[in-house]
Image (cartoon, rainbow, N blue to C red):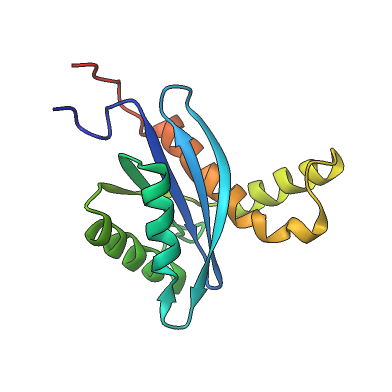
Length: 153
């Protein structure tokens, strides 16, 4: 049986914020990612029903969660929240979860969203999708740095 991290297929990436969680889907064969949704983050935690629905819908074999360290690599409150989410996500889904360094991803997401607005592919009212764009970046970073060779056994 193949290791999910080395099997070609689908993965989901999550950008955890204090109000929303951006979600993107990635394809390990094409090493591509696209934002697909935004999940509410409530006082009591994430909208797990929504997260579970996305996992059932996309049937990923790997989950990625952004690890929001400071630029110096220090842990902050949102880092603890994201890591707790990653742990719970793994427990709930039974799937492997990897943390991905997301330093400076917000700036990159802002730049991409502004470019999409300039091209007419996004509107100001789509700003909540900025979190999904950040999740795209998390997946792309995993592809760039952590994607191992495929095993087609």
